[in-house]
Length: 477
Image 1: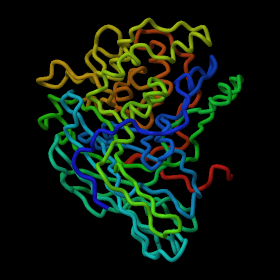
Image 2: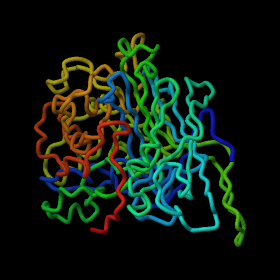
Image 3: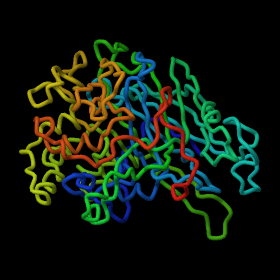
Image 4: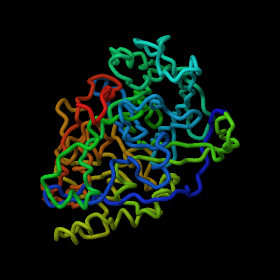
């Protein structure tokens, strides 16, 4: 299969069937009631729900706490991975473009793009086994299934350059008998890359935390049924990259130009041909690469974008996000809350949400007292007077990491947290619920919570920071 390179072409509206309930209303008011949704970007649109290997679930961007001259970028795929999912365990899709894009001047165009392209092999295809015996290293001879990747980088619209090739992917956590020390196996998938970068790809605990019992008629009408982390015990496929700030900043100067926008995308080839019935050949892919998944800020496609536009949003590019402006200015969730719970919705148009999702937060009198200057608006960048509104996760790299991160981030006075980038510990469900109900206007939003305040397992203190994947099935004790 031809390896993807160059700019993925704009994807026509993806085809698919089914519907995913829209609404942060799905996670809304644990103490007031509940509402309909899905996790961050887990199965958020009809088409991508049927293509989990390409489904972006979450994006994180934060100043590395143990290396503050660097930024860590994390993107996850394949929601709801159940441990013990053999004999064909989880993997990235071969030949697909998994990208993390960086906009460092506010024009909504990627100035730096990192791309991972994966290749899978079996040492012995004449067995059903994932591994022949105990696996102690990432390239252990007893590991039958091997996946590797090439890491490419592109500046602006230039050609992609390979900066690391044939790097190992951490395998799925099969269990204690097969991988008695999984931490040691995963450590072999953390690799140094030229230019001071560090890369990782492999399975990890799903770091997103929330209560998703929202499809059962809004928590079954019983408020005591909130507060359970639905993703407890599940895994995802993770890509992580630690990059010097100077590599990401406009003109290489993170002091003068500290704000970056981050978006992760997945692109597949446009054509798939299935062999005739009875053939032993695998399907073949060909044609131009088209974008099928996109993610910046969490929950945007779930709670801002209506069902009829969800596939289109996944196929869209940031420069065209003005199309979705009215949805941000007049969001559905506060109206639902007002109707169901008699809690008044903030007045529209919601310019505070435009700042959170489309332009970055600037000090204009609408923010909490903790924000005393521009926080992560792209206009911080030298020479940029008007940023192009676009849905990106924006990070001000000049804000240092905090020793004691607050789960509510900026709302709790912790400017190193969401919506200034996103850390693993940030409780983005509660933050966005509160913001949607007017927290940036100074409204009292204490009641708005899903009752889940932290991940089910601790995060690591060093790169790649995500926790080890679970090896015991969710339905086992």
